Amino acid sequence: MYKVLRIADQTEYALKRVKMSNLNEKERENALNEIRIIASIRHPNVICYKEAFWENNSNSLWST
Image (cartoon, rainbow, N blue to C red):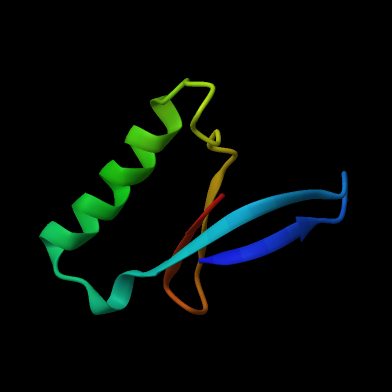
């Protein structure tokens, strides 16, 4: 988990990296399901999901 600053709007985010190459098929499915679940949560006590993206050169899934 990383604390990052988005340059465009100076907003701080938590950024999570999952290295997919180290995971088996079930673990990959779980990582994607985690993002889907977090993206669907709407609650005042939970920080909202912003986006997820894939980085080819590191074979990593990133989410904020």
